[in-house]
Image (cartoon, rainbow, N blue to C red; front, side, top):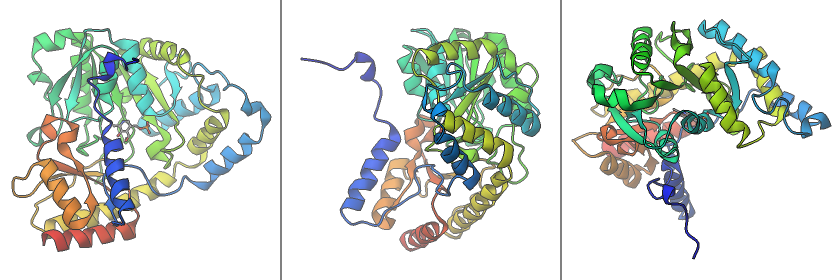
Length: 389
Ligand SMILES: Cc1ncc(COP(=O)(O)O)c(C=O)c1O
């Protein structure tokens, strides 16, 4: 009898596949479910980007294997480096320090295969993005959960990591603006993180797809703008949230050249790069569509206000975080994440992501995503008032 590989045994079903199944089942039974669970922008990709894709897709030259399939198109890498210099004051070399990816999720996986040995310890924040631990397990290593708590502004307490663990660790996965908590990091924390990584020879996988989704005066911050970061860190990023392009699958890794070369080695032995027309569309986006990010932030700010006002009218004393399009909300009445998510589903047909699915330290929270059309969010808030008011 054929059997699946043992390495898959410890990998749970991907959180959002489970949530999607639950939503689809309820919808098939005629229930009008509003999902505030998944972070997937509903606004369209700006028109010039779509038009550039259509134009370049017509050129048979682009139907062949992608140009410079190993690292991604040189023109795109150069444009990315100009974008990083202009917007985040980070100097990155397009040749040795930039790799085009199929989204940052792919980067999380390639980073582990590139930098982690079987048996290694890899630090990962708890709560954390659900993509990290499976990548660590695929590399045969063990994740070590670094807690993030409200008392610490949802930043890891680096001094609290036991030194024997830090000595054993070969890598650290984290992301700010943070999914799921919405917390943002400041320069001081990032400088401490770089120092910590240097002192223990830890490679940093700094995942930054929400870099521009910040509010209330928070600064879009790349770790690559911190002195010395490129000695130890790679930053993953993508077009998904910049330009409502989650479905396009276009991202990048930038930073330390040893990590970039190692990830490139993994990638060139795995796939053959991103369709040229998508890369051309990416160039167009960076050159001409930067201003649309401000419009997108206004939409999220408006939705954020609606949810926060509703929660506070219902008895929460909730201050929203400064980053991402998520709200990380403590449950009411001491309920567990799962109990509270189930209650919202049963009483209001609203789906939220239970915090416990992001790790042990996510217990007691649920995550609301603001990526639903405004009229659906209004309906969801009305249902919430009726269910809990
Ligand atoms: C923290 C984090 N990293 C990576 C990703 C994957 O994004 P991409 O579309 O760039 O692969 C997401 C998506 O939600 C995310 O929240």
